[in-house]
Image (cartoon, rainbow, N blue to C red; front, side, top):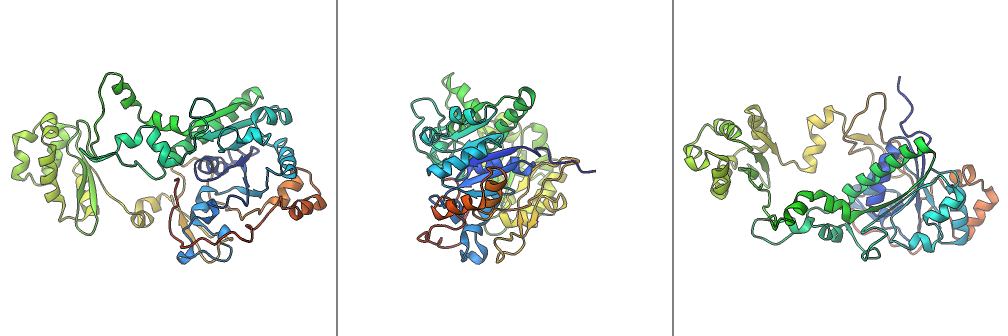
Length: 428
């Protein structure tokens, strides 16, 4: 029999925007926590991101964006202006009934609002607070502004990323958001476990830059010995061939890696042992790496006329590590992912024009626990429920908040409708 959700009974109050924190708290929502997304009509960028149905933002565009749906899955929405004295008062009443409060403001913002850890702990001594910022709450960079792009650079990832002999380039548009968001989820789970054992809350100061630096740990060690890791594109420091090679069709590719002489022998046999593969220069790991440019050119000539997926299956059968370079459309149609029920067909009631769409799921399965996409919140959809049930406000008090511009379910009248409907709009 299916058990209750793992985090059933846990309540998270998250003042969040952009991608990194919403990505992290969505994991807790998927695991059954009640995650309350606190929003403001002063910051509607998250809801303005596409993609929108048919590439066009609709009349209620703030509830229709595909990117918002994925990063805020299974949450509740409270559109409350916490900077207003009445909004702050309502927020603090909610804090009394929550286990966790999160934010991803610049350091100092929560303190100016009177919502820093010390202030919240006076309201709820067992509260867990987490702040996810670019550079952390201490140190000379603590107040610096950032987007995922600039943190990517400041963590060393950009410097290491690039083609051989070329300039540095960005590693990924959302790598720092995803990676730091994963750490948000991990840190919160640890804090909740600690609270279960001790009954005590704690403070979490999470840095996106340090998340990035952690991911290049080998280069940090090498630099202390005077070795500067070179940019190699898709190549490897000692493996060859190791890269992405062209295939039949427009912009179709296959990734192939060879890590040992035994694997090289398998690749030779898979290719039918062409004469060039018998060259003694390619007979050893060192030889292949030293002559990798010539080897890559010859291998590219062999892969170029072949279908990438058929070639992938052929090489895998021969014991060669290979994978076709998949597009997003390839992934949606992929029989392996569909057999594993990775994608979730979801019909967002707040975006009826979109109809049922496949959304990416979670990369893990757990026996006895069902992880599924249950809801995507409309702006302020849960205002009344949360303020009545948790904060104890009356209908009259809630209506007063609406009248005074503290509580909302739609954007400001002058908020422009997003132009175009494409795009990830990712991390920055």
